[in-house]
Image (cartoon, rainbow, N blue to C red; front, side, top):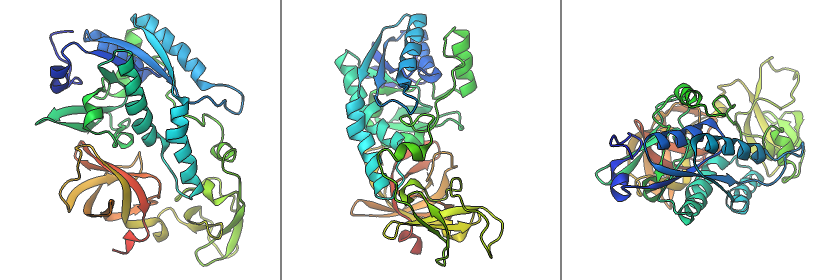
Length: 382
């Protein structure tokens, strides 16, 4: 290893593993490839491990992972490192996809990326890496970590447009002590530039988007294979029927696209948005206007809480929070914790906070943890 310790390798981690073998979660994309590159340049012993998490073919009969494996082989050839593969598709189905389906059937909108990180990348994959002699793992996530007074912190990525701390809030002390994030301190443009300069064949590969197991097929078409359609009515807040939906569980709060609502007599010519899902009546409730009051809430309740430090901060606690990935963290107060349910009150109303999604808490660049949004209506009356 080089005498200059890179900033993405916490000294507390190096103290425990002076000459670590790092196993990189190589995905076939440019971010994890540059993670490998930076480890090699730092003189760290590393190997790569590709996870196959999904065996089901897409609608056109293709398996996306096959091309990704080929790209991983090309990267490893260019860097002169070993590549192994592991099939975690059963673990993914049981630990991520089954929960995804259960949440949709219950009318909530889950975020499988959060669960994948908790159950697969930093649990099953970490176990697999250790089984092949790894001391630490590294990923291409755009986050950073450090260790202050013996406690690890999860920090936002330098590139605010790529920061992925929202998806990693379930990581605790044990996971952070075993993980490295070599690209978290770089902007995306520099990551691609490093890959290009090193001759990595994935330097211009398009970033993957959306939910990994759905691919490019329409979301409703995919979900209907597992959650049968139950068409029903679309209604306004006052109960006027203005259309039909394909199945209330397929829609999410705040959604505009795919409602199929044409001109409505007596209504303005303005877009309609999903404001509520009444599963008992199989009704989709819609309103007009992106910022309609029915889409706003000042408070919410969260469950299934995770704290990076291992425990909740003293309450009440002032911080900021995101209720969706691309959102700027909003000032809020964590008010009280009762029966493992946390109440969160925002300074300003938040649009379309959605049960099943995650609310993630921040003190500046430090991610504190988060939980699953359980309710916005009951807490909004506070």
